[in-house]
Image (tube, rainbow, N blue to C red; front, side, top):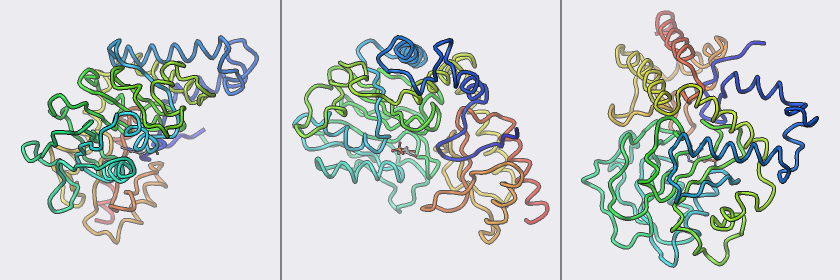
Length: 360
Ligand code: PLP
């Protein structure tokens, strides 16, 4: 077996020990004589998997008792519509901070349900920094404030929680969930697709404050009604059982690494390794303003874009796939989610150095 250092933005690499455990339990989960894929979600074995995963998630994030943790489907994209249908509660407006493609997509989808108010966006249309908080124009009738803590495509991250007064804060943590501690009590709602830091695609996590749910848009399908999902303990219909199970194993892995403080230290170290190298030479350049650089998605360009293909081909041959930047922004992107270890980042830096020696 040969495993590569996978820098893909998602679905992304999972911890090897988790994959090995999945492999060892694949045909017979703990003496049940069946795979988790084959189990009834209503029977005890799966119920124990589900309950334990939620308990571990609550423990890791220190989720207060007045928040519901929901295991849903449809990805983060479904949430762009599901959130307004649950949280507008008769209002028409929500505030949005625009920092990149994913916050823009959330605004576009919101237009189907209400009138979005953009509190700020980079003036020149270049999503390479977070607009300064003193330039934000908050509206006074917003049902909530939506932002994207980590813009996966541009590699822009807000390292602090926005100060927005009493309006509920809604955060799309899809690409930075569990990468560091989150002060859950400062949010009205947190959501994330699983497929970057948590587990296989197909599972979407929603953590929502109880008092915000229960007044939904009449056309909302009940599988997307947070209150109905919460009341049924995320078992309103067949959940994504296998993704839920693997995510549970990843949560145990995070706990064994020392929890989210340890993840934060590890992720800060990994991203510094790469940013420090990029900043110390002149062939590669990171376009993102230093205070807003992502720990999870490091974007960079080569001095000569004509060498991009050679760079990517060489990287793939060296066991470093997934580095091509998103088609909307070009260049390169190295995604350093939780399961990427420092050795993988060092291998990338070594490859980049060698590439400049021979081709730069
Ligand atoms: N939001 C962010 C920040 C993302 O990175 C992504 C996917 O990469 C999405 C939303 C969309 O997620 P999904 O594919 O689960 O709908």
